[in-house]
Length: 408
Image 1 (spheres, rainbow, N blue to C red):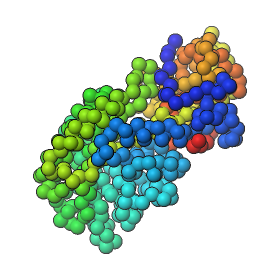
Image 2 (image 1 turned 45 degrees about the vertical axis):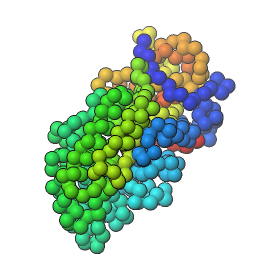
Image 3 (image 1 turned 45 degrees about the horizontal axis):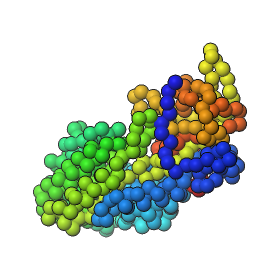
Image 4 (image 1 turned 120 degrees about the vertical axis):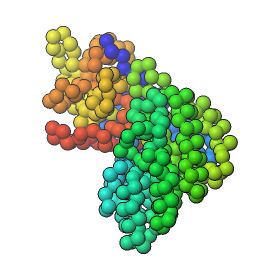
């Protein structure tokens, strides 16, 4: 038997079914018209933002990393709740503009920005988080042609990393950012070339559950920002400190101690060096904001036995939930939080493998998991599906098409 990960708090059972936003999943599926279906909870999105605001010092803003969940309804819901948006493509820029977000609230990172993307961002007034000298020179040339001073920050590749990070974004040779020792010279060249200087972006890692690691990384980021600002010789209008806060996915995972992180950051902010006295501070979060607010629902379409093993075959799979299948960077496959949604809260009675409909053995949603007995027609729920789900999965694979998405 393999245990499943911890189901996030905030979900309930109504009439023996999983309920999201006070509504039974069978009702939500009927409204959407079919499975598979992603359901995102407004209440859980709101709760997470409120928890962050309560824990963080008032001076530290919250930016939403759109790549975690670029669904238009999610972006629009987050718009009045966060301070800024971080994008990674012109496609995400279009989504934000369509949602009515002021482009001056948007920053654009990513190591391969095309000239047309740079032009669209500069024309709109988006801050470019410059990833290289070449990108910076192209931005200046495009700005000169447009007659617009490009709003430019520099993304820094620091020498340190966030310990325990699921995905390290700094330290050593990286495609991301400008090596820290090269930043002062490039920043001065950008400013001399006519850019509107917007400061620094220092992102060290993601999906960290250790408060100690996050506290250490934030302290290092603030120290490096002060050192670089001193060397540049100009103030730092804004410092994007990155994110890194993770969510529990697997058995044994525990939530980040957010109050402890917030208290440590408040101490640091209260004693900032003079060079950062007027700097706008923010953290950039994606998964932590939206991950636990999403549930992926699929339907059991077959129940079969093979060599004494029970398989629940669903109409979903890795083409919608690549990460839950274990094929999105996981070294050893472990079970995401999951449940038989139409028998929610019932006692587990059998060990089953929950698989998808694709013609590949990689298409697994839960291995050797103890579940209540499920029959054809029952709904399966995979939790922690609000980030890197629908948009990060190969929905065109084998031609089954994308899942529906709703916000409730």
